[in-house]
Length: 151
Image (cartoon, rainbow, N blue to C red; front, side):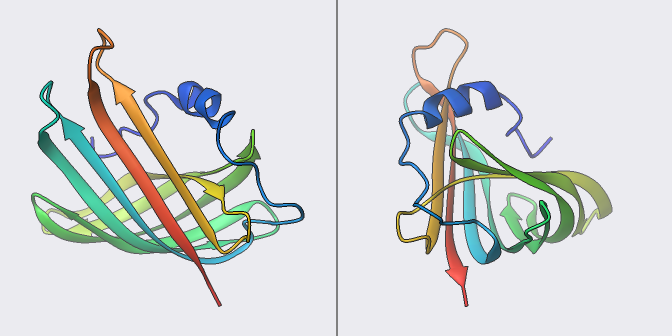
């Protein structure tokens, strides 16, 4: 399964307590252009697998979003689009929803999830999450999100 992002949302939110707070009166509502990378690492810190996404997400005042973009991975490029709900938890923007991905394997249902902390000026969002291996001795995976407000 490509989206390993449901792995430790509680840990992500706990770590968010030390993240920069949302700007006063800033809101994630609007159009965003984003990049996301997911990387799995071995015990020596070398990349073993992963993928990258480029997408646009429209975040609406009513708590919903639409998203569409491209995933680049070992099996090539695929297109995806979806929609879902968003919320703010402990100053972290969380978007979760259903999507469909069109690849060389056909159309497949998938899950979309995005995390972000709004920059002080409200023009950007970013988030990095690192998950340790079960023994806690090394970073097993890393997800990084970077978005810029569009127009």
